[in-house]
Length: 118
Length: 324
Image (cartoon, rainbow over all chains, first blue to last red; front, side, top):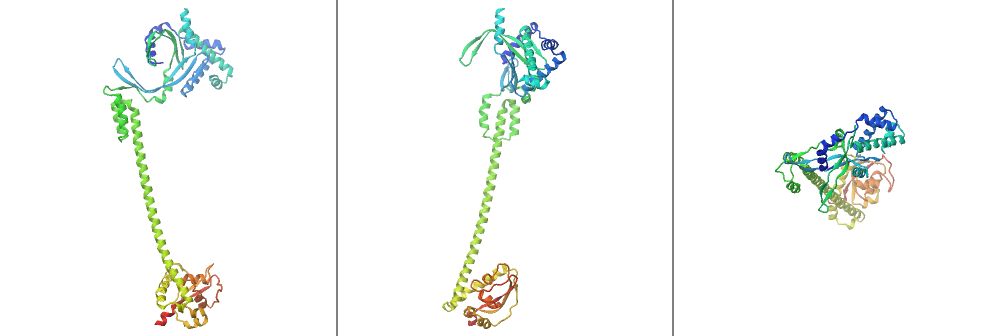
């Protein structure tokens, strides 16, 4: 995600947050439990283990791909200079490792087509 | 891959693990499509955002490109995960660059500074005060330059040490060579005397008395020195005068030889591998074994036993004595 996208997201954040409402953790686990047939506690445990496996692999620099969803990858952002319009000062941003997510190919197109139909 | 890890961790079979992951992804996707946002504890937040229509300058072709309004899935990881992933660079912070700092100048100065040797610590402090982290690369380069300088000086010192050692070795070997040469010269000189002596022994009458005196004098000196240095088991005895005519009558070689036996010079204990000839050659010179044999009552070419004591005769030139 580049800076422009981030700024755009920030501008629309207040509006989108009002309209969007995510499932909370309990709702998510209940839904997953119903679909997989495991108990609530078991599903919660499995979810925790899965997220831990994903994060551990990402920390180690591995690329994680979840079918039908997307790919997680750690990229290195090189050091760069940015200009802060508020303070009118230039800032040197150090290099950093950033976790990026790329949705599965074709998913975004599907979303766009669906919106166009509506 | 993810299914394998999950199966290992949980003990589920691979198919069940894969099924669980698929269901997990499905719910996430459905939630995102329905609600536009999905939050997973321990991972982060996924969101579907609208990207508005806008003009963009394509830097590759220098043409304006209009992007139409579209949807995009974005992901914001949890802060703890962000920090864990960025741990290798966590010590760096965003730094405000001062107004006076000209980045172009810094880049050009970097090249110049490589030639100047400034203590690394001072340089680092100075640069950090003035420009913050902006010149981290420059500082690192300078440190490298100084380190290279140190390497050069150590290499030079090593070269000097090597050269010094080589010079000392050369001088030592030259000294040894010279000493050897001098020694060889002495030996040659003495051996030539010995040879001469041999000839003279055999052809006494042909050689003039003057040359005899001159040439034979150093022989005695050299042999005496050698005796003192090498012959440890030798015991010196006080001169006991004997009649030279007695031994001259016993052996024709002495009778016709250049020397008279005038007494006992020393005693010699025979060691392993020594013969009368080798002993007499060592003490008196080549071709002088007849004197030792006659003085000890041995026959020509007779072997001596180890541990046997031989008497080494004291010799005197016949001509000298006759002159006197």
